[in-house]
Amino acid sequence: MPDKFRNKYRIPSARLQNWDYSRNAAYFVTICTQGREHYFGDVVNGEMQLSAIGEIAETEWLKTFDMRPDMNLILGEYIIMPNHFHAIIIIGKNQYNTNGGNGGDENGNGGGDGHVETQCIASLPQIPPQTPPPPGNQFGPQRKNLASIIRGFKIGVTTHARKTNPEFAWQSRYHDHIVRNNESFECIRNYIISNPEKWEEDCYNTD
Image (cartoon, rainbow, N blue to C red; front, side):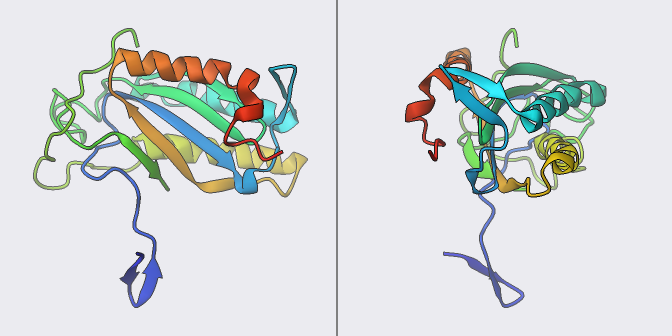
């Protein structure tokens, strides 16, 4: 049931509560186009053929890692599909998420169940299954976390894509999943790799 804010209904944020999204962790993200329109290309014989906008999306994603060296980002597996984008991104230890930064303590204490939809690796970090948040505002500046990375990527793609197609738009929300162990990491990685060949049965396929 939506809550009321200033006498208006609003949908509560589905973001994982008590989790600091600047933390040293691996994240699996999925971002869809608005209306799941097929802007990024087509799957042909089990392989993704990128359109001009699909190539823009790939370029902007790869640029993300060059543009944010201070966040110590690690590029994981990714795939651009006709109407959505899957990727694993690892936020490494950096000045914003270690002791003295804005990301809790140096052991990564935070909490949550790990699977949310949010708006706005050689060895994975050890993440406890459930730990309470530290007191006070542990989240700090909102420009050095997962949301800021996705926001910058979406803006970059939109800016360039609309030169090709003025109708291009993203869905406002995106899905994220905190990868908690190497088994989950490999499972998600294999899912991303096999996405094109399983497109006919994909839940995002609107054909």
